[in-house]
Length: 460
Image 1 (spheres, rainbow, N blue to C red):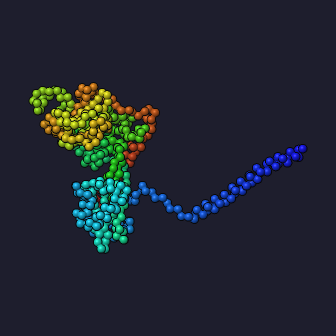
Image 2 (image 1 turned 135 degrees about the horizontal axis):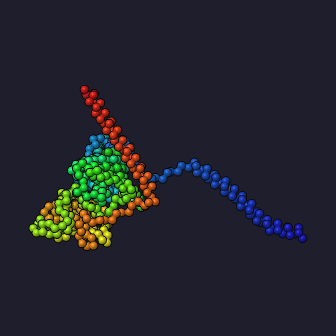
Image 3 (image 1 turned 30 degrees about the vertical axis):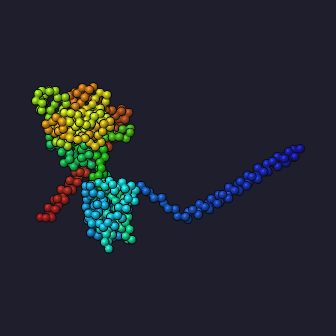
């Protein structure tokens, strides 16, 4: 009976065992086949995908670009600039390119990515390097159409026109600029070699803590540490990054501020103890101006009688930039009676600021638009009831004009106690970089002086 039972069980399991063996065999075959396919695949060349976002580096001249790209040889390279109310086609005809070549050049540029947009947005004054085609040489153009990109157009050995966008090579440099104030901060900083956008950033940053009209004296000094991007072909600065460190010495009272990014990665500025440089509203929304009239009763220069002056007047040349005194929304931008061209910004539920007698508004100023503290909103003028170019500036608290010089404004957020050690280490790195740059600058000056001395010895 037991033997019969075992035979029955064996009979039931035989199909299962057979299926398992077949399945195992099939796996071996698939493994063998897949191995063969993989081995064969190694012998098949696979074309690498093109990186369409990467651009080749440009060159300093058409001749070098021709060598780089393998174009038809060129000769007699000249240059011109794109004039006002002129497009590329008109410019090429002006410099005596034949219509056939002009149409081929325009066609190949339109075939570039966003080619039509490029042609319609070429900047006035753009430099055009060119070589006119002849029976022997090829036609070629190099257009410096942005700070970072060139367009190169050339004829190949078959006389067909081609075009390509090239990236202008660049380098970054850590830069330390020091200066002594003689006339005013604005002019002295520019003379020290500071780029204008870095200067405006410095003014915006210091504007919370300094009254530029009353606290700055001749002989005061400043220093700024920042990173600049330089075009390797022209050696011109094309971009500056946010200031890393700024210091100003006002009659022995030294203020230092350091860049430390917030949790959103945005630059914020704090002193050595981690206190924020920011206030709700800047003390003065203009630089390089003279305080010509204070808040209070005065004899009105036009009306001729004593009248309450509910703001501050800053005398400055027409066109001097005016900054937003704080973050907020533009509540009014337009003509406002005797105020002339006028802007009012709402900062909080409590504070507003107003700017009057402007000559014009910045292109980005629109009612309802948010504006950042320190950004240019307009320019000094003499519109409305005014005897000369100046800015009339008002601070409005709970809809009543108050004296801007006497209001106490809350500060921005300070460094958290839990993060203060990280901040101190960050400051140390910045100051070590500053010391290294000072040493490098001293060595460069010594090298220059030695070079001049050696030249004098040779001449004698």
